[in-house]
Length: 346
Ligand SMILES: [Fe+2]
Image (tube, rainbow, N blue to C red; front, top):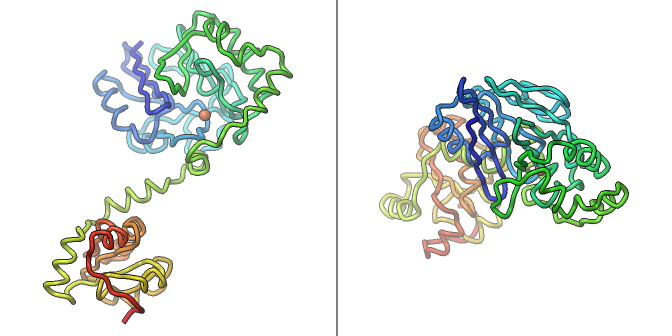
């Protein structure tokens, strides 16, 4: 078997390939590492057929949907997974054929209702059901400590103790352990009595993972993250450096339209001299009165340079072919000592 492990922070992704047919599956891809996975597959001469998420992740963004669109591979999830756009839904006891390899599916709810473990002859990919020296938490949406107890003690821990354990997370840089090692030394698995185990899981009082709501929203719905919206906008419009804008304003003040898309109070407190005010929230409403010339050269600006990028992309989509966004926002403009005007729009 061809095998690659890719750690991204604490997240672990796995590329497994059949050496005879060169077919591969990518387990728990992380959104930011798509190019890395594709490069590894190319280096190993593999074609990725399956993109498998072991469960609905709450702490990072799954790369499966975007990769599926990009390379045409099938997305595989447990049948309880809420995500749309899944090509193959699997359940307990079923087998995924990967060339000559056979990947067994174990439904192991508890961390989430759609958690599954993936079984190969010498190893098991445990998702967040079993971690090295830990288990997944059960206090996030669809988590259930009673189910986790059953999944661990009645299912996973009954597998061959020599099986290697590859989890979806490890925050200490370890690559794997074995079922036997976990039974012997994983602190949570020493609590073998059901009620005590459930009570322990209910009283962990863990803090919520960063990006929780955004990760759940996008992983469950297939929607976009704010970072993806910004990246798409950045790919649509050019930017103008602050010094470039200043020298152009000095040379020919009326040659371009500086469009300030912040709210009125922010504009009045300090704006680029000659800038027009058109708050982002009113852009579509007032665009026809305010910007009659679709060939005008427009520079969008806002406080931090992000909303102006989205506004510029919106104007570009509306047909303003020469719209650009200011590289940086008014905060950076002020800090650079660039000229400012105060008061209401003229
Ligand atoms: Fe998880």
